[in-house]
Length: 157
Image (cartoon, rainbow, N blue to C red; front, side, top):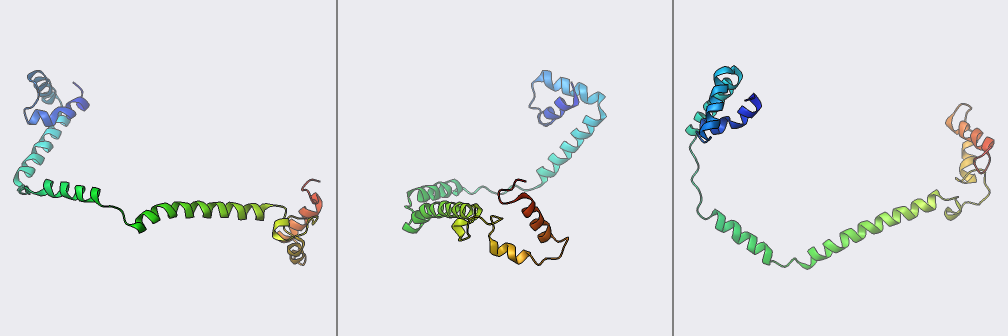
């Protein structure tokens, strides 16, 4: 038997809960494997420690109280506010997402929907480009303006 298989059986081996055939096979393996012998020693030491720890007394009414609480919760009707919250939170979330998509559509268009005139050299609007005009050379604004004038209005040379 291999160590991996033996380690799975060791707890049952210690408790004498294995069939005789498997118990003998595990015992034979333990006689020749120091690693598994050490593992058995550790399991036995753990068992001794657990035997020393006193067990807590069982509460005879625990199961009854749990079942009573479950029945109580099942019979409760959700309040009007709970029902309203369950309905309106997803609806409000969906409306917020749709509003965000709509605003993004308007902002991402050619600028007409946001009040800019069509025919400018950019989709941002002439007023914004004019604010970039006095920028120093080698700035990002200057690079943007030079690319914009090279490619023209539609973005092609």
